[in-house]
Amino acid sequence: MESKLCDIISHLANNVSYYKERLPKYINPHEQIDIFLEIPIITKETVKSNYIDFFCDQLKENDLNFLFNNEYYKVKTHPFILENGMSILVSFTSGTSGTPMMIIRTPDEQLKLNAEIWRLRNKVSHIEPKNLLYRVHLNSADYPFPFDPNKKVEYRIADEIAYLNNNKRYKWWHIQAQDLEKYYQHIIKYSIDFNIDKILQYIEYTSSFVSNEVRKIYAETFKCNIIDLYGCLEIWSISQSCKHGYHHVNERSVIFEIINQNGCIISEPNKIGRVVVTSLIQKVMPFIRYKLSDKAYYMESACECGNPAKRIVFVHGDERIVGTKKNGKKYFETIVDMMIDDYNIDNYLSIHVTQVSANEFDVNTRRLLGSTETFQKKFEEIASCLYPEDKYKYYFTYNDALIFEDIFSVSFK
Ligand SMILES: [Zn+2]
Image (cartoon, rainbow, N blue to C red):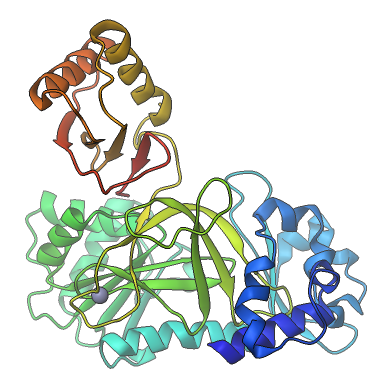
């Protein structure tokens, strides 16, 4: 990892405008970590406000105006050969939170990113591409089943489940978490005995947060090991959950950091902060100390799986209560304010609420001095009085070690 970091810093210093003036031209390997930690943390907005600053010189030798042309966005065919012979792949994030983000890679970089995912899979179990069922978009061209997809979702899922139940080939299934939930609902609704022969052994889901409880239910229902692959379109795979359900970073391709709201690195366990990632693979359009909207914290002690890398727990960056349009921060701040105003309950250090399912919330209070019984009673009373339409269930804990910056977070899909 050390030499990869040195190599990427030296590339930035010599080939990427944004970093040329910020970094020394020659990097002493002994100083690479210090130099790296001086590099500014950037966001999607930093890159989008001036893409050219983040493109390497070799890419900039070409007339790139077409990349910023809306027509190009519509076609986005792969790969694209530029005037200087360079081949690139262009992709875009979905843009659900504003305009889409453009991502440029060479086919070689893409191959390396894919190879990392395959390496992670093979660390779990020997798996070849022919045994992987890759199911992401419902795009007929990518449809992996040997029949046409039924237009009605329910019939389509029924066809797919019937096919998988006669499956002799697929050992590993890649799917988006929200789609996996649809299969789960279908299996429960029709009491289907899924995967009877246990040919399918692993389900790898991505794109969403699933709680440990739900993961266990999936494992029983699908009779499979459930693996959570965490990543983003910008830098591809970041970490993978182990058999104990904890995330470990893929340190060969990514440098992972958690930072607090002042931009300082959090290295101690149980303190939640924003995820910052660096790709050690991408150079044409590098992503260095790139802040994501997701939040995470480290867990204490090593994992039983034997992986020495820190255990990471991801927390949804969205402030809304899942399944509603309500802002969780405001929602619980109002309850807490009323507890202080009406009952003088303020004898604690902090309160943090984590949504753990559609209707359940963990309420952790640190250093409460008064009665836990009164605290819980008043909290529930005020909640049901303020929001009588919400039939939420609260679980109260008093763990002083669990430190969160905001009052509210979500820890399930
Ligand atoms: Zn582990």
